[in-house]
Length: 89
Image 1 (tube, rainbow, N blue to C red):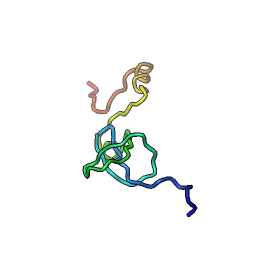
Image 2 (tube, one colour):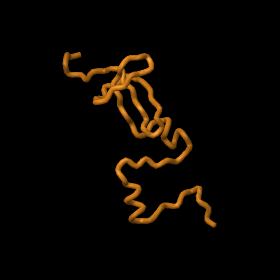
Image 3 (tube, rainbow, N blue to C red):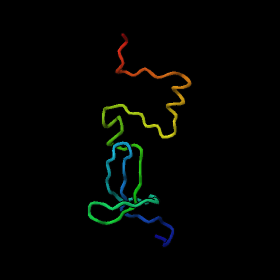
Image 4 (cartoon, helix red, strand yellow):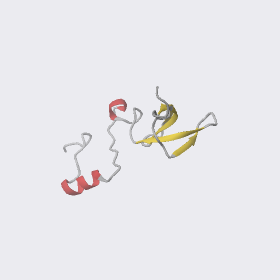
């Protein structure tokens, strides 16, 4: 490999902001935050809005992650949506 052209491949802590779950893996992602892991070492922290611990496909539950107010704007414009758990009575 050519030197100085590849990003640094290192251990990074990923945190699911929906569930609070964290895990450590190797990645080249750039981060500004760091966190102290269970082993006492400090690692770069990457926050993700959805992972396998919070995604409806894996959990079987429906949750809405709204990071930019899109749901509120939609409901304001078109009215609240009917959920599958609501009864028709």
